[in-house]
Image 1 (cartoon, rainbow, N blue to C red):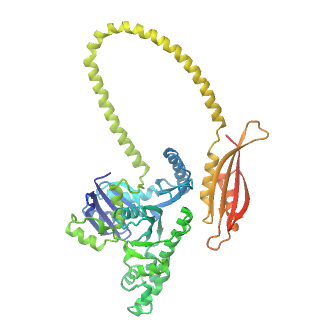
Image 2: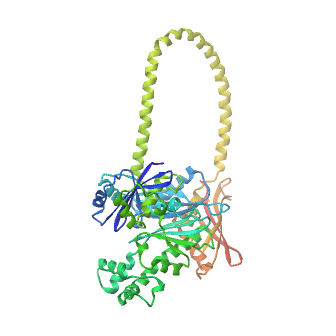
Image 3: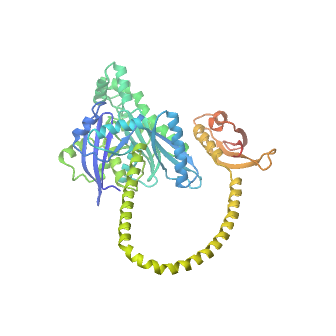
Length: 540
């Protein structure tokens, strides 16, 4: 755990830099700076901040990063690592570029489900290099890249109003992105980053009034009022026109939140999942009437998220305090990035380019190599000092060696018997190995399922088995059986969804050469039950 952490949140409008440490009374903020940032001004802004940037945690959002979810049976860490390495390699091949990634398990919501959910964060190395260039050109270095949505979750865990069993939505509304985390008590249910942000409002206003993007943003700040209570009594006719122009685009923010809740329901199997509270932050949280707009659409309390109310700000310089006071809601992600570095008990998801990981591993090995070399030198020196004494004792040991030689012969005879026993045991192991079933069929089935399974369908059981090949004597076939069910969701016929899914599932390249058979089981209420049998042919 680090004693002090530096966080950098490179937003589309500003670069936020925050330095914090953990003290006896919680999180202590030591420095804060925020400067305007454009496409060509990032490195300049960081240099002007005057804050040391060594070992900084840099936030990721928008197109720079992708989040994926995988459900796997409970497995040892080494096996999970192998599965994720395969998944990352497949995704890198599909993307056509080098990817860096990290993953972590989400807290289990159903211990009896027999599956674990893995949150996988990926970023293209070219995006990481671009962000790294801004930091390194300012004399700093990058410790890791962290998704803004998990940083938001860590800020909530460390400094937020956590309520047991309450489902809270955390949304950071930026200019071009939305960072979202759904939390139940202290458990992370779902994390997501979306493109959009308040820029969609600027675009709608610009199109309606035929003005530039800068003018549209000024109109949004000065005149927009999304509060439903203001309908029919806007401050001016111009304010009403601006609001009417942006109202449709504003619904994309609520749509993003609602779709995330739907995805979370399908993934966690919590059918009655609903928000108890929504906490918003980011520059967009300041829009006039946005909380009322979200409250009406989502039918839950909406409040501003201010974790700095629980932080110690007494050591901040006066200038930093004034700047933070004006950007408390924009700086939430930066605080989450910092506390994630400071507290090992928080949720960890840190992406590093493979080249940096190799360098770190090399440095770690080099330290141990130096220690080993020093130890060897010490042993050699000590041996030289004892050389003369050992020469004197050599003659005395000659007699002992004869005795040891006789004992060695006896040991050799005993070892020969052990070797014969090992041969017998090895033959048994080889026989069992021939009987074992390869797991490639199960893994290919799981990948195809993850690629095509829609929200209306879920899998209850995946079972790996084998069958004899009638014409091949003792040869066997690898057979995977999948039991699942479908339910109507959003008015879509589950039978039709099942047919489309089976067609896509059979056509998946992962199942090339396999025979796929679907059999419908008796319905239970409104559930359509089915069984898929995938025959991969002769086991290798």
